[in-house]
Image (cartoon, rainbow, N blue to C red; front, side, top):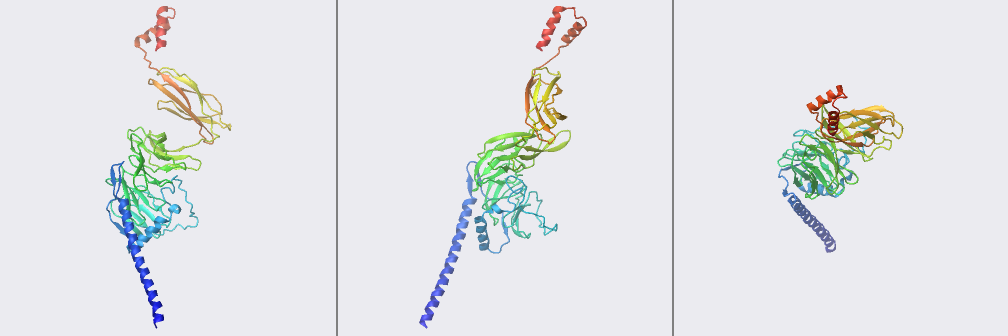
Amino acid sequence: MKKTLFPSLVVVMVIISLFLSTVSSGDFIEKKKNSFNMDERFLVDREHNSENIPDKSPVSQSASNDFKDMTNTRIEMIISPKDSQWPVDSHDVQHTGRSPYSTAAAPLVEKWRFPADDWICGSPVIDKNRNIYFSGYSFFAIDSNGALKWKQNGYIDVEGAPAIDENSIIYAGTAYATPNRLYAFYPNGTVKWSYVTGNHIFSSPVVGDDGTIYIGGDELYAIYPNGTRKWAFNPGGFYDATSGSQAISADGTIYFGVSNDTGTGGYLIAVNPNGTEKWREWIHNDHVWSSPAIAVDGTVYIGASLVGIDFYGILYAIGPLSPDAPAAPEINGEVNGKVGQTYEYTFSSLDPTGDTVYYYIEWGDGRIQDWLGPYASGELITVSHSWSDKGDYSIRARAKDTDNNWGSWGELEVTMPFSYNMPFLQFWMKLIEQYPNAFPILRHLLEWESMKL
């Protein structure tokens, strides 16, 4: 009897010790988790001089017990979300909008609908577990069956799309909060940190390969994954650093559009990974609300709105030119002229494939010639122009062929000095024209004075 009882007692003691070990380790994990959240949620960005303290809005959880939430959170953070089905606006940081998943076999039948508490302006994003994140008045997480997982109550109001990083952290920026912030949420809905920005955030955050989060407000902000600022780029004289989202190329260059508050338009700007400006290109005289998209050949596409006789928009393609594009036009004509006098300028461009060409001409005074043609490749064309104000002007022209291959710019610098015809000078010149042999000395003096003007 003693021999059979002893093994049974040993088994019972082992089971009890394992149970106690599990409970104590669970408590330890919970304490470490809470400690980590406290450390992360009270970061101070000394450069920005603002505390990155999360709002204290409550989180509504659909799960019934805290230990289950904690376990799910740990799993979400360990597994990489590179396989997230739609992690950022337009699918990827290049904004290609291309999904690897086919919808050919999907029937056009409504599966479900989920009511939000305000307008849904931004695109939803989808993680690797098919959970969907989006914003109305609050910020929501729902599963693929349309059931609520959690929501962040309060005036979050995200106008753009959220973004998901490699650690399954969800980022979203507020548009009309006071103050506006970039939020970082854990997958279970708790706030990891928030970063105060200036102005409204209408753009969607994007996450670089190194984990840096980029978001536009009054400036373009680069934020470390721990919530502190890496750098901020001020485009200068613009009220929106970006209304659309940023796009990141494979070399790390960040592209975004800006709008000017002076009515002179704005630019597509390229910024290096260290926050310095690479280049900028003027693209519009009103606003840009679109996000850039980057194609496989490096072409950057962006839309802009222009104001002329009518309101209209233009989609720009900026990138490497086709080798079949026409050459930069050769421009010839008067480079030192008089204001108000009409001058003739010649333009000629060779197309490598022999296609006919069209010419787009900018005179430097705000006036343009919009695609004159077609003309034979290499044909010399003549166009007349006059300037009404004194100044230095740059005549720019480019050619395109019948395949819509645009060539590079040709330029010619001209100077138009001030010209003023005095009334008495006009009288004497007309008199001399009528009597060419009279007043020979006066005639020479007036011609010399006319040449000076």
